[in-house]
Amino acid sequence: MATEYSQKIEEIMTRELGQLGKFVIKKQCRDLGIDPENIQAEDLPKVAKAMGKVMVTFGGPDKAKKIEREIRHLIL
Image (cartoon, rainbow, N blue to C red; front, side):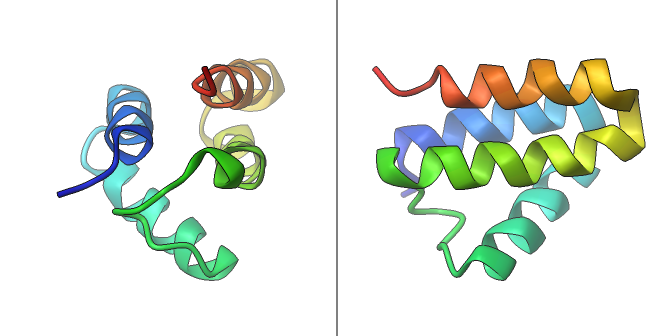
């Protein structure tokens, strides 16, 4: 069962990229040495930055900043 953070990040990325979003999460987490199903609060800054970098390609810098901010704000 995926953590709440993993589920929320998947929701954000699939909303933005469709099915590609899941692949992007897996690849970026693997590159960071993080289990994509077990993302923890302390992983969010690194994951947010990685997703932001990917989103520059797909949506431009403004969209990238928005997504990065949205993921960072998942920390409660």
